[in-house]
Length: 231
Image (cartoon, rainbow, N blue to C red; front, side):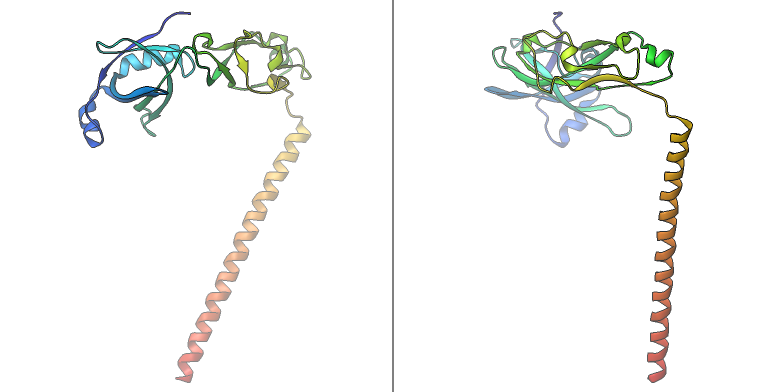
């Protein structure tokens, strides 16, 4: 497996000072079992390039200035809700003799006749939960959907060609990929009727609430007028 390297710098700034000092760098933290937590800076361009290769399930060799490189996984990161700019990164230090739980992404390849010729819609899971030693993890699991010739065909977890060193943490009969038949006109019409019925219920409920509110307001006004007369 190709080694993925990422160089980072020690970070002294914390809290509000971090945002002011950031510039084109991203604040990050490195932590793990039996590892002294370190605050570091990561170049934004370098991180994006590394993440494209490693994702969250491939080991990265992290070089913290002059210290010996450490093996980490990109455990988590926070992005700005509007700009999607990465704002903070968590690197998890891994020991090569300890298993880790993670998710390996599914990479779809091939072409399904059920999609191409029959007009079906492909559906598949995005990733699979696994447990393995860091050195045995793979970047992705390739799934060839050319075997999906009809709507009754499906690919399940037990069909995947995965090294036995990687323990799958979900049931072997879990569907990985299958093709859903296109809806008939009757199904489309039924769905439209159901939506119309739901809209009618909402509108009826809103009208009823409006009427009750008006009645309540009228009742309060009558009461106030009566009280005023008595006075």
